[in-house]
Length: 527
Image (cartoon, rainbow, N blue to C red; front, side):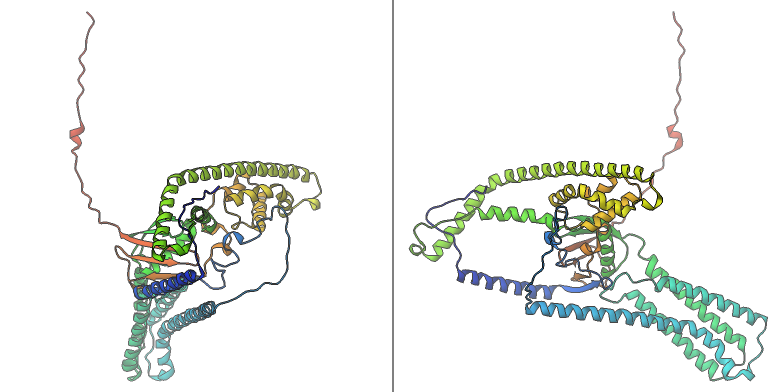
């Protein structure tokens, strides 16, 4: 029970004018901080593929995501609800829609430009070979054996180039980056200039003069295909091989609970490093659980709620400045005295929570083991039945789920995991375990030891949009001391980069002969 500290002489209260004054100060502080952030930081967005649920959707946030009483009864309540939207909410929603439409258009435009450039590259050598036969066929010299062999070379090289370009450039997009990929843009410009240069030389030296040496024209087309293959090799080096050697160690910290991971990355730009961090986050970090953070907030609110100051003489007998000063001193003194015993409250609260978790875990384990024992008995009975009367795993899961539902529900409530597991997902997992003949311990592993983010339903964790905040340009490379933030709806990832140091290794030679020794034994005789 919270204690209440009483002091004579003064009363701590809040009036309407004071509340409005504080509200105005908070508004000015938010405006200042917002303008300061806009001056000092650059914010861009990284978008995952569309048509995915928001991480911070109100339907899946907090403890009120779903009905927590699915283990007891289910009641459907219908009625009317009132929703209000402010002008800021409308502007934000409109901006999100415009951003999503713009990003979709940019993604399709990039793909269209890539397809057009690819067609230009593959059709150019064929055009070099076909145009002389269409424009001056009577002047061309006959093509000998060497020339016909070059046809085969061009055909196979174009096939190899087609497969290589498809494997490197036409892979499914993992995310939408806020800025253009510099190396890919440079390669596209290089290919375009290269093809245009070949066309200019072809137009001036072959089309205008109507060259009769067809074998030379074929060799010219073969040289173009060879150069394109070398450019593709350069693309592999710049886009894939350059980033393989680790050069930086990145420390990733989640802002809400301090969960930290470390990753080694190579020479990457800030936006591509951010994309790699997000991919690692979904596989390595435990799922974000806002319910676990509410305990500390409620404990702090409980601590402050027990402090009250009373003014028995009335507010009119004291000056306003003296009243505020005395109130502050009284609150500070009371907080200092309560701080001496707050650690005891925290200790006993955590001990009580651990005891409840162990108790409900034991009940859950017993309930699940009994349910799986019942399944084994049912399987033995079904083996004696006709094939048409055998129960499928889904029906078996629905039959035994009520026996463990209440224990599982209480355990999930105690560990603040009830919003991560719905009744439908638990039944699907139970049916999966029954189908694959898994043990009760294997079934409980998903609930007793929370796994990485990807193991949960996509509705609970997948964010449609991440915001990358960095003072440096997102197209610049990582450097020692680089710092950037990946911001989502409910939390942010703080990423700091450290350069892996240069390691100097020396060799020390040890002569093998220095390890040799001689053991001399002296024979002794008994006297």
